[in-house]
Image 1 (cartoon, one colour):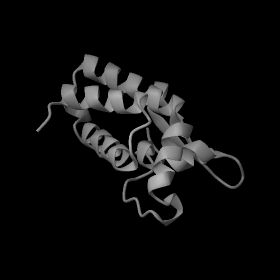
Image 2 (cartoon, one colour):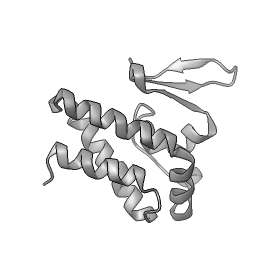
Image 3 (cartoon, helix red, strand yellow):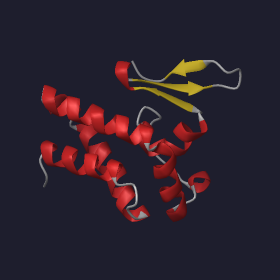
Image 4 (tube, one colour):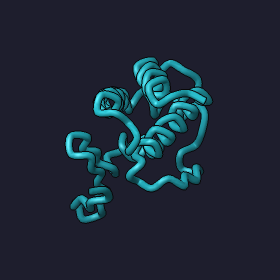
Length: 121
């Protein structure tokens, strides 16, 4: 089993190298889920590195989505993760339905009346 530091390093590599296969990108999402489960045990430095990797993913969200969409149909996907796990809902991030505020660790769901509902505190 990989340590948190190793997971963060691999996750960071993956989000910088979006040309991975769809299966590998699914592993990337699983790694990020594991890091979220372990978040309270991350050191301050590990949290900073994770934030940087998350920012990279957001910056590469369109490319990440395109590669994932080659592998799976997001409209048919049954994601059990809450929207606060925005990396698993990258299609909604790209479409603007989910608004991610990494600086404040918040995720907003854009509603029909164009207001954002807070999903995380």
